[in-house]
Amino acid sequence: MVQVLEKLDGGKIKVVESMDLSEIKEVLEYKLFVPDPQIRSKVIDELLSYLGSKFANSEYKLKVFIAYSESEICGFVICQIDPYYTSYSRKCGTFGWLNADSLKICKLLIRECELFIKENRIRKIRGNINFPKNLGGIGIQFMGFEEQMLYGVAYNDPKLHTIEFLDSVGYQRESEYSCVYVDQRTWSKGKKIDKKIMFKYVSMEELYDYVDEIRNLANNSFHEILPDASGMNRIFEFFDAFQKIPKLFYKIKDDFNPKIYSDVPQFIETWQTCDLENTEPFAPMAFDKRTGELIGILLGLPDLFEAWAGRPITRCNVDTAMVKRGYFGKGIFSALNNIGQLTCNLHGIYYFEGTAIWSNNSQAIDTIFPHCKPLRKLYVMQKRL
Image (tube, rainbow, N blue to C red; front, side):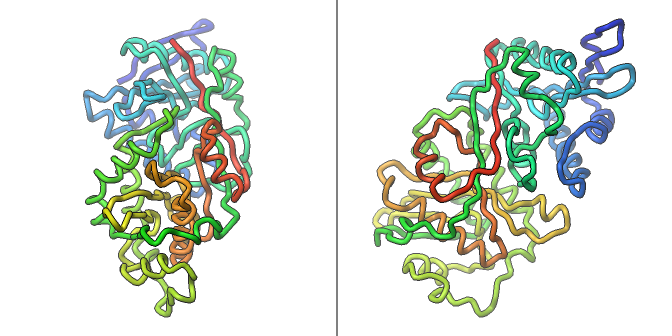
């Protein structure tokens, strides 16, 4: 379906709404910016698959707007109202994947997004929120363009003035996010752990048994009202990424000796009590031995972009960390980092990047930044309608 929404300058520029995947594919192949050309076609296929699944759901609210100058594609944007996404705990509209050659084109595309959001009685819109998050990330990058792409982190054309364009049409640079290279292999606070704390790795099948506990932990540990939250659906996005890891990745050395690998008793115990070739190394968990309660978890993303390019996976996006209130300051987060890095090392992962660290989250900044080197920065832009 194609609907002409706007004409400007005697018909030279027009904006259309489209649900035609063939047309959208042509637009993406012509305009979508992907820093690594080796994976561009795969990114396009994944995005088209996502859009197709949403178009098939008549209740899901999503629009794709395309800008043409004469017959030439000059911009596009995807606007949606995801039922799981909230901003500061409130329902919020989003736009993502914004690509506009000029301020005029950006203004036309964004106007259609705003009209769509207002039609659905929502009075705030944020972007870029590039659904699906694992593929496109959140924010508009303004620092670190020279860095290698990382699965789950936003990327955009540094030659386009997207942030300045949005400034000009009334958007605020509302949230700043940082991505940092974890350059310290071991965090000292994570080596002195209460003996009542137990660490655990489980298989992919077993992870599904912990969904409710992970959700409850998220509700408990994220005591700050977050500017961008994906809700319960985000847990399954991690699981989906885990299931896309090539099976060969899980093979480790036959001569692995836990006692040589670490001097932390809890880590040694963890490795000795699990099948390391049948567990998810990107999801270390911490439990209270007395109650059996899940009190902490790290959820990382394997850099599937590397796999798509035909290379071994060597990088991890440390996306989400959760520790239950009442257990802060006990070294649990640092310990999860330490055992997470060591276990991932067994599978050939040596690069770790903490991502989507909100600049207003003082606890995260104080805990993470002393061990890391800033690499990328991004803005999420916002406007009240």
